[in-house]
Length: 270
Image 1 (cartoon, one colour):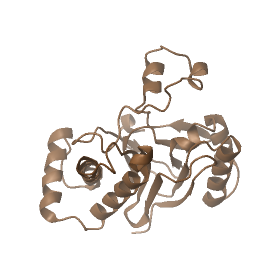
Image 2: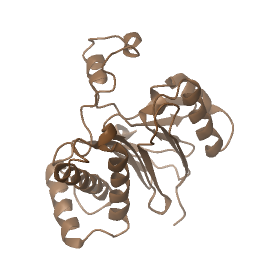
Image 3: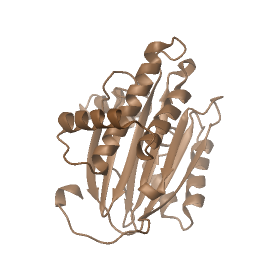
């Protein structure tokens, strides 16, 4: 079967940090894409992000033992009401597997204590997009000239906004904007969310770390994505825009073009 997607990713350490704690995964043969943003500073957030990416890759490439896979698949079906053995269940289970590996490392070594990572992952199957996420790494969709954020941030800032405790204008100066409420590796069971959406040919999906979205407004991201050019060119423009705005954090951009067929489906998933 021909690939339904075409993707490109770029990651940059930024202008302030000495180490890149972001990581990403492209598995086009599985139509799977992941961005992870490590947390923990000297507790090696870079390790957590790369462990997450490696764990998801190992899951989907058959590097995880059958007994463990079956136990985790059974667990996530029970926790989340997922049915069958399709890719959606596998993606949730792979993220839970990543969480357990990171949590075990952080629990067993003082060098890694406190480390964790955000994650946003996208799996395409037919005309359905399935997303699993935890933390404040985001996924956007550009469709028919309009950019829409599909995920929401698991952050203290977003809770304040949701509860109308601050205004969007005040958000840029919120003193605790980097406080994350959910992430992988912080608990023995992952705190995550997932959703499905219908895809349309011509859709462009952006997975990114907050090193982009903290520096570049959504309107400017939309304008860059609407400009003519390849995914490589647009990804570079996004990274450059974050650097020009200060580059205070690591910046990771992963762009996915959806090339599949039109299918009708449940309006709730659009």
